[in-house]
Image (cartoon, rainbow, N blue to C red; front, side, top):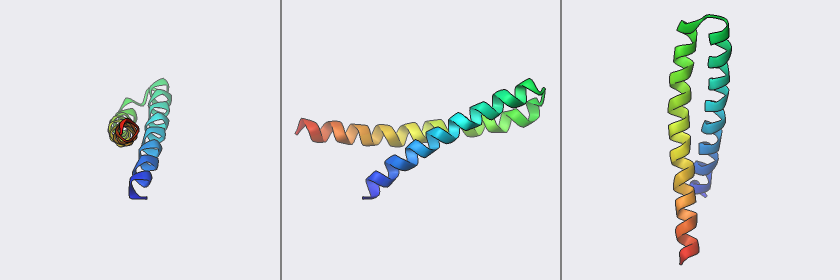
Length: 67
């Protein structure tokens, strides 16, 4: 059950990173580059962490299907 929770957490982090990138685009069009940079960093960290968690579950499922 814990591993399924980590998968959902990974999906939520990916969705959070997408919303952060939309905020970055919105702030860049308003010429607020100082506000956009923290959201860019947060989006990149969220995308990397979420991708890692989702890839871990995909690898586990692939290995279980091979057996």
